[in-house]
Length: 127
Image (cartoon, rainbow, N blue to C red):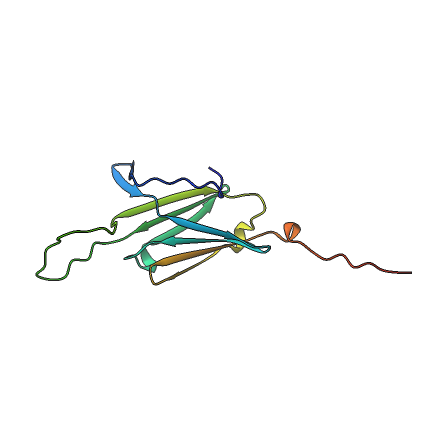
């Protein structure tokens, strides 16, 4: 699946006996980069694993269910557990410059484009 292909599924996938949810993603592009935004509430930095291997970007995350002390769950709409999502990176992404930020339950990945594909202005000279 190409990075820009949008595949939606609410059903968890099962891999090696563990159920994985696909986190929803918003993807934006400008002339310098692609930005990916994942909603992963209830996780923390230490439970986010992002790797790039052979042009495949993979996100694995874990969240924990929070139930207040001395309370029982009446309804639970948030998904807690394991998340997994992979993308095939286009060849115009500079894999060595990918960066990530996690704040308020949102993971932002910045995928810079290689210099060769960025638009540039050509100066016209007169001589």
